[in-house]
Each structure stands twice: as structure tokens, then as C-alpha cells.
Image (tube, rainbow, N blue to C red):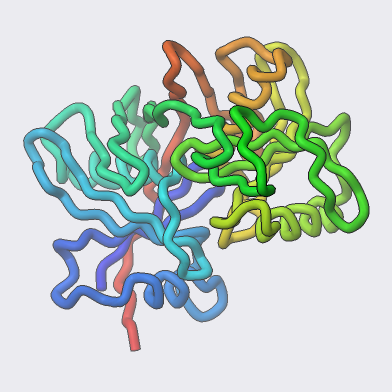
Length: 282
């Protein structure tokens, strides 16, 4: 089974084109096996794509976390999928429309240098209502900003929203020790108030246009960067009037640019095609 590996600032994905698969596998089981960093190839997630219209650039997009669960969408994953499609010349259109379970998402190639691509992706309209995230504490909320969430007898003011997938944002003056924020992320990911689990972002605001973010991703754990997480972090910062509407998001391996304009959120950043191989499933 042919695959490509692509990463965006260390957030790595394996990509399998449905046209390369003779017999459609159980993708959840495949994702768990191929993403294992000891007995598989190793990645944060598996992208399973299918080209629906080469001329118009319409591509079906599915993403599976390293634990085999299917997610709705991934900002970095979309840019990695676009980089793969441009690299392999599988699309004739200068723009790609990804068909995801969270809706259509447009991408545009900004520049290319060999195997490194800079891509802009529209992430849609942020959703704030509790039922749209979803967030369920027994009440209905139009917005969830500085909600007092109790974790291990400690209160964390959280801001929650959806960009097609759920996010929970925590603002800090300084980042906790790694073992501490891992524990917090693990607890919040599976908190009963988040029926579909959630992604978590820890944010330090450095200025009106720069934020520093750590990412705990649902079904994966710590990741070096996150596209949708960067967008959620930016939206939360704007909602609290801590930043302007165009922000540089500093991740562990570099910067993403996030803009909130005319209600829609856009993220721009790199995606690098690094290898291709053949996975031998049992």
C-alpha cells in the first residue's frame, strides 16, 4: 500500500490516496497500525483522500487520529494533503476544494520551493454556541468565555469553540511544566462536558499580533503544531480582545499566520513532503 509522509511544523501525517488501494481497508484499524511510531511508520494521523474532480480540484478528505478515531477536520492536515496533491500533480486547478465531514474547505498555493509548500486554507466560520461545539454542562450557552472548569479540584477558566472540531483554550502567564500540562490536557480531552472529546490549546499572549501556543490534540496527545488549534487559539484571543485579527502563532517548530476576516478564519503556513513508501499490512 503506497503512502506519502508530509509534515507541517512537525505535525506529521501519512497520506493514502484511495486510487492506490485495490481493496478498501478498515481505515480506523489501518490508521492505528500505520501511525504507531514503534511498529508502524509513525505519524500524528492518517489522511485518506479521494479525488472527485481533477479539473476543478475537488477532493474528499478524511482524517484519522493516531489512536484510530476519525476526526472532523485538521488545518495542518488540509495543508499537508494539498502539498501532496500539488507535489504529485494530481490536481489541475490552482485551488483545491476539500470535502470534509465539517463542510467544504478551500485551499490556495501561495508559493513552492522544491518539496516545501506554503498554503492558505479557509477554515470556515467559528461556532461559539455550546450545542455546536459540543459542550454540555446541562445548560445552553451562546458563548463560552472564561468558563470555570473544574479539574482535580482546581478551576481553569476556559474558552471553548468549534472550527468544525471542538477546541478548549486556556490562557496562561507562563507555561506549566510539561508533565503538568500533559495531565491537564489529558483530563480535559475526555471531560464529560465535551461529549465528543476536545482539543486543548495553552496560550501565552506575547503582543497584539503574536501568541505562543502548546497543543494537546484529541486522539493523539502533544503535537508540535496544529492548524485548527492555532485558529482556535487566535479566535479565543480576539474574543477576549487580547490580540488584533491577524496573528502570528508561534508553535514549537515555527510560525503559522491566522486571520479572522469577514467572519471566516484563514490559516497560512508550510507543508513539506518528506518521503514516500510502501506499507505492508498484515
